Length: 82
Image (tube, rainbow, N blue to C red; front, side, top):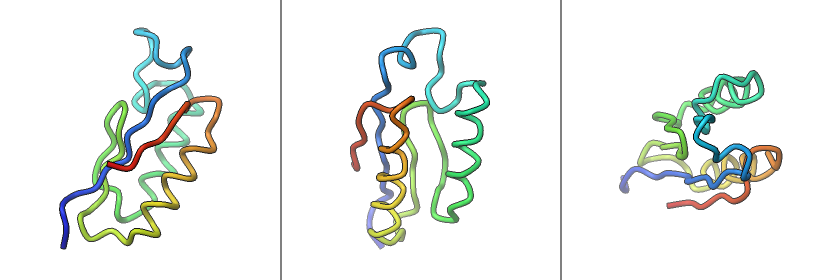
């Protein structure tokens, strides 16, 4: 098993404002997005700007989650696997 993996997000300008909390925002769209993310058994936890996955997560799962997040252009400007 390797080290825990994470996906770091950079948000669109409107979502990066101090009155928004990234992935922990109360907006219904963000809450739905988080429900989808936690449906993956490999997801360990969600922080405002990061999704952490188990160390043993399949690289394909990591890529799938990153692509999914990258398609959320209303929220995310860029995605980085760290």
